[in-house]
Length: 329
Image (cartoon, rainbow, N blue to C red; front, side, top):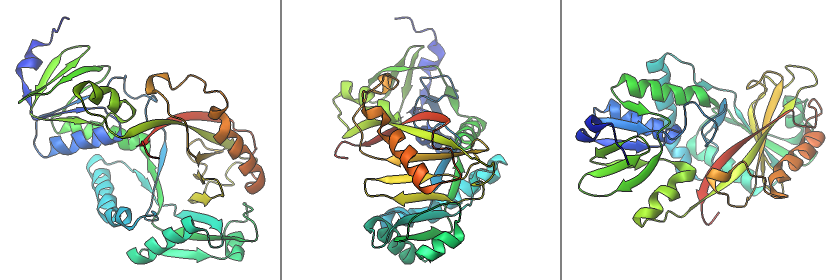
């Protein structure tokens, strides 16, 4: 194999980060900002939609089901605020987060208890309160709600680009379209790619769905698996109906429906469905999985018909994403 970049091999990096999704880009940014000589490698051309970090939006909130997640949030909100200031880019939109479920629903109650423990602003809603606040939805007479007032939307694509731009601004080296082929452990770790060889004192593997493919050859088997998830965009019958909505979680009997205000693509409301999926190979994510690939789409079509009369029930746009989860999930 030919490795033309001899100068890079002669350099020794403090850290090489493999995978330039949100985890890798933020890790590399922090490493470079602390003064470490850092390289960030990405197998695809940036930006891309092949992994887990693409798209216009992600949810941020205090309303987690476990207290230890919520206890991290003050520091996390501060970190996003600092990145906004450093990059002069608006990344967070405070919309609030609406939790919905039937009265007594454990998933909703757990999150309300976390909000109480954190003493963060929230508002519990009766069925009548739900209807009063959200007349454009029909949640049923036995549904209750809670608004996490600190919840909102992170502009995911912008977050990713800000981390990468600031990483480079702090002296980091970013290579995209460079796939890692082999990792050779040692006193110095050697990283072999399709374009060269590099050496570093440490390597951070933030490759998400591809992590097992990198780690298995060196005898490590992370307890993870990969799911493919569909995200649907439903067209508003009247543009702007749901543009002022909060992000929301609805604890249904079979899983979590979630959604965003209609701002990612104006006039279209983004929704997804948390469910247990079959494992996939990340390099074969676009192959059709018979039956299983449509479960969330069919669920969401029925969900929209039942709860969101201001939306067309057929998704106008369907995008895919991958989740890397515990093997026991």
